Length: 248
Image (tube, rainbow, N blue to C red; front, side, top):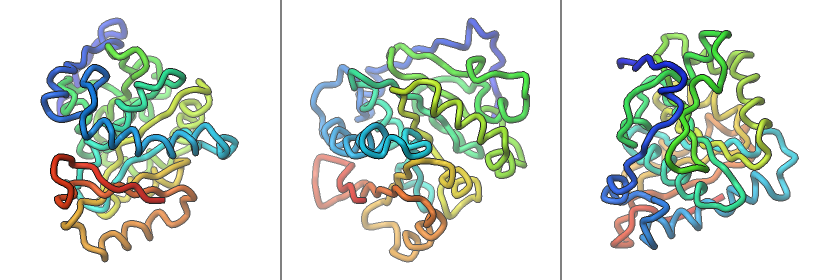
C-alpha cells in the first residue's frame, strides 16, 4: 500500500463525495430518510447512552470498536455508517479510525487516497495526533487513517504508546465519540488486543452466512469486554434493507 506523503497543511482537510456515498446506499447527512439511515439511528442510540450517559464514568466508554468474526461481513460499512450517523448529532463530534492496519479500507470506501495515520504515530514519537488527523467537509467528522503497515502491528497496538494515544483520544474532547474499524476477530490477533482497550465493542455478523461456531469463537476472544453489542447484517428476511438487528 502506497502512503501519500503530504505536508500538514495539505493533508489535514479532505473532501468526501457525499453524493457518491449516497449512491452506494450509505448514510449521509443530506441523503434523507433511507433504510440504512433509519437502522443506524436505532443502532447508535444505546451506544451513545453507554458512551455519554449513565456509564460515562467508565474508562474509554466513548471508544467504540466495530469488528466481525470473519472478513466480508460488512464491518467497515457498518463502522462508516455508524460514524456518519453519529456525525448528524447536534451535541457530539465523531472520529473514525481505520484500525484494520493489515487491510485498511476506510479511506478507499470513502474515495480518499491513503495517508499517514495510526501506525505512523506509534512508530514515530515525534509525530503528533494532530499531524495525521484528517478533517472532512462534514464539520463534526474527522478521520484517522491506518497509515503504513507494519509486521509488529499486534505489539504496537498493545504498547504503552497505544495506551497513551487512546487516553488522549478518549479524554481530549468530552463530546467526542471515536469509532474504530477493526480487523476480523478470527483472522488476526490485533483485533482482540484492540477490543480489550475499548469501552464498547460492536460485532457485525452476516446473517445466514456466519456460523454459530464462528460467532462463539469470536466472542470468546473478547469475553473480558463489558459492553458487547451485535449487529445482524444483510438479513434477507427483511427486503429493502441491509442492516437489521441490534442486541446487547
